Amino acid sequence: MYFNPFFDPTMIIVIPGLLLAMYAQFKVQSAFRRFSRVGSQNGMTGAQAAREILHAQGVDHVAVEMIEGQLTDHYDPRDKVLRLSPEVYRGSSLASLGVAAHEAGHALQHATGYLPLNIRHSLVPVANFGSSLALPLFLLGFVFSPVLVEVGLWLFSAVIIFQLVTLPVEFNASNRAIALLEGHNFIARTEVAGTRKVLNAAALTYVAAVLVSLLQLVRLLLISGVLGNRDD
Image (cartoon, rainbow, N blue to C red; front, side, top):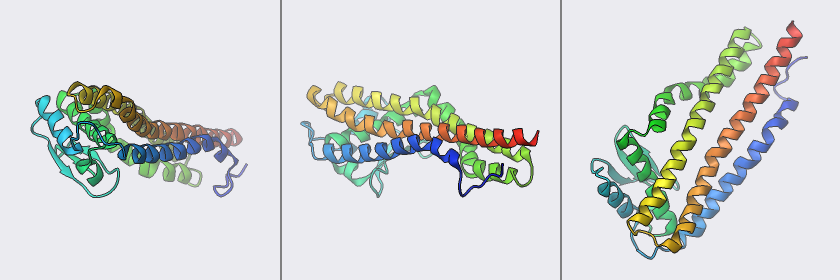
């Protein structure tokens, strides 16, 4: 059977994952918008909460800066900088505090040598290489050599391993965020549920990404297996 990349019935395998990914993006946007309108009783901004959390844990070498964009918040382990989007940096909503504390959680993971984070960092070069070359090599393998198909599959598998390792990193950062916010009285007990909804919605995007990649791998294995059987 000739493999036609423009009409491939195995694409249906990936559809459930794509639908979940679309739902996850909608969920995180709607949760952030909803709880961005709910001010915290404490009145502390995201930047203040992040700095207080880091200081309380003895991590004073991490700077907290503002970065342009929406939901562009992240912790940069190379520069040891926690970068928050304007709405999170200046905002005092439950969404702002939740996101800021989550990113502070990543900084604390880095400072304490959290094993899954270290593994994730070590996989970054391979994951970057695999995400850009896995599929091109897989397709080129049908033209030039089956070896390239295998290399493409291995590289794609490396990307999935990276995504799987990312899950405990993200869930742990969210759990730390809730515990630290409540433990330092930055949010009241009645505000925990709302803050957690924002972080859970964000975590769903990572789960969806893993599912999409796993289903894509199943698809690629089916394609390569069918072609291999016909060559025998």
